[in-house]
Length: 170
Image (cartoon, rainbow, N blue to C red; front, side, top):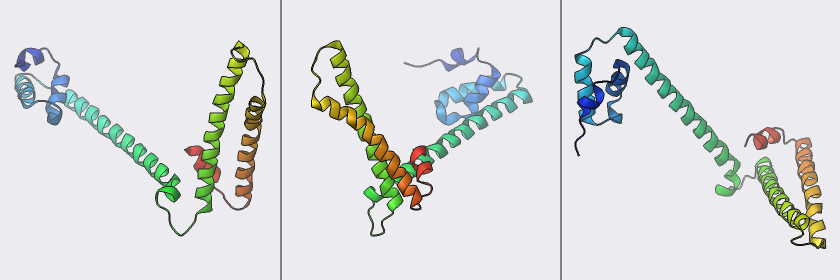
């Protein structure tokens, strides 16, 4: 099926046609040729050209910023899991403590989920028994944050400055 670009583009504004012409890689060759042909038949102002150039420059700069953010995040994640992914003889205690705190945080979220699920079942009376395991799960919700806090404070006192900012930024 052949697309009639001329019929499609003849109602486009000069700005829209300039966007097509300035980014030929994004369009079919015939579409770019037709847009060029239509623009050659029209009066194109300098303001329209300047507007399109600024628009395309904004797109490129926002893409560059996004790429930089993604690269920075990749670096942080790679650096965070470096002791696991690339073990070496030089042990970095701060990185291992960060990983330990991360695992403790995951365990806490999992315990919180399971405890909430069990509490909802109890309140609905689907499972109307309070047993020792439920109280153990409640106890987990209390001691895990305490352990997390103590590890964080103890490591900070031993010279692990920067641990909080590294861990909390992830």
